[in-house]
Length: 77
Image (cartoon, rainbow, N blue to C red; front, top):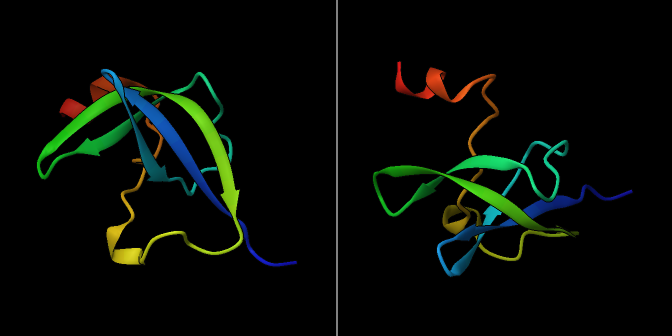
């Protein structure tokens, strides 16, 4: 069976943004940390999950969900 690639959409204000997600335990409704723009990290809610048989965008253009942290406070240390 081919490897499936998980992408999630997160709600950022009124916009929905796509991110590649290596962690398959991320579910709709989870809050994840994602890069916004060039330098900012934001916590956003996952609103959609979708698997692709191949990457829908070139690898260099895929933004990734940050690895899970036990608490948000670890991000600021």
